Length: 423
Image 1 (tube, helix red, strand yellow):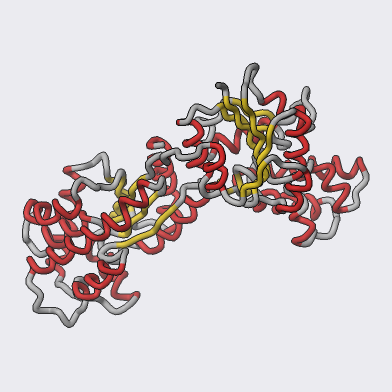
Image 2: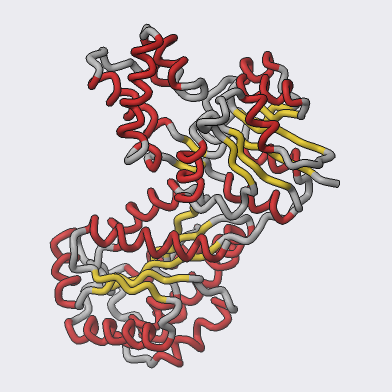
């Protein structure tokens, strides 16, 4: 049985308002029109651009055509990438693909532009055909849907967020899903006659692939000496991962769940200066054991990306190197805690221990670990370098002496590349 699903693009696969609205405002300014308000800008998502400029900004046909041309001056260079894949869409596409569905896109956005957007976000590996307006094809939704369908099919669905998608599906003789997470309303979609209404991406998965096991997600960690800039880079990477539509879970070690957070309080309390080095290593491992089982494994099994601020590498570097317990001893202590659960990639912010500790001391009060002497931090740095030498494929080593923006761009490029390779 040949099962087909045809997606709209803007408002269904991607949340595109940032680039569209910025480009509409750009066109209005260049043509001498007042900047449209938020209510007017929202109306531009879905209909054809020329229609929107006429209906919502009072332009005549000639001026509307000029506005479209001016809009594209900015949109085709910058605006099309000011975009975000809706959370869950990657998981939906992966699930449909593994269940054997034919997947295509039928959009009112120009075909070449649509192809660039879909390729930029790495969704092209799931989509067999992209259909949009060209010099030879008008932006009429029914025609677009018919062109996106394969020659033979038994079941076909059009998925979109506006009435135009539903009306096009009816014209093409296929079923339709109106989605509530986009730019249309439930009333608009139901009034247009959608076959089914799904408020969330998960409801689409449940409708089209009931009982399907979600594809596995990914486990990432970020490491570095205290003061290396992890907090800033986690914030920047979080935005990038969200923009590409990966469903992100943020966590940290020690901590990440209630039991592990209680152990964190104990191990980092500067009043516990008498804590034995072995006790410290075992407490870290105990917190990790709970975190792995309660947080990390469930997130990955649900198809999400778990980004953890520190993992077992920190224990090996700080306890094995800094406390001089030895790398192998700390690995042995952590073996039952980790039990084979390791990050697919670990970002290491590479900065020497003198610089990192100066940064950290200037920020906030130091904790028990950070109050250890210079030789401790030198040994910790050496511990990290030994780990990188042992497992160079896992580590993404980034020069952390540059500006946060430069560091963030490199991390984003390399991490997104790893995530896409793993899909």
